[in-house]
Image 1: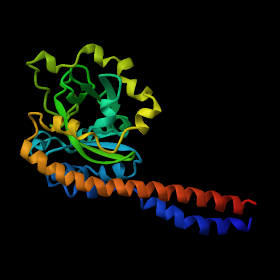
Image 2: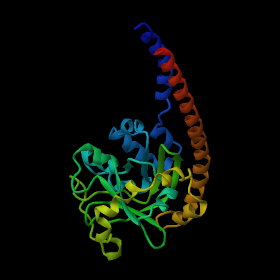
Image 3: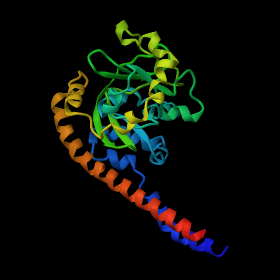
Image 4: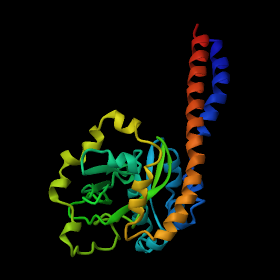
Length: 277
């Protein structure tokens, strides 16, 4: 029994190092002033801690000018709406474009709370004929009008930050404004796309779809999405330069982090084998 205290002492530095490698969503968003309101709401609703302790996650961020749509929501409803913008898997533009199904479901942080009903905890993602991508609540009849604009930051395969054109508000959340009627039937998702078997396609997708997805989507994909009506062209170009330089830091960090984790794993196995000899 004597070696056990020694094992704890040897393992402690590696455990502490591992805990310091978690990302911090507010630090990631800090250089992007256009998402300051979104970041503030993450703090206000106390979701920062929950997000930071997830190993794989995607955040759908919204520009400050569009956040007024949810600013008057009660605190609890605001929290649930913000949870809907946190996807429990890694997605960037390239990965989304390689998913075989044109319409599929994604699980959000709201689903883990146990209070989401009628598929409020899921997002429906649809690729249109013009290659644009739109998000909406998976609740039947919900509008799908939040357009994917660009990658903001990616750190494969831990965290991805994507910008969408407007907040996604699941109809039926207590205190949420009523769903506006859809004047153009094409904006309503085809009922067949709501079927669970279609929605589950990304969950069943081959492993290589995830492994082969690069940190950044090709420039032509990003530019095409940035040219959507919701994105101002001049602002997008400036933001792209800032995002590109910022992503290099995090991509380098991700590579270093992976090497560190592999080294730590090898050392831990060596220590454990010595302790139990």
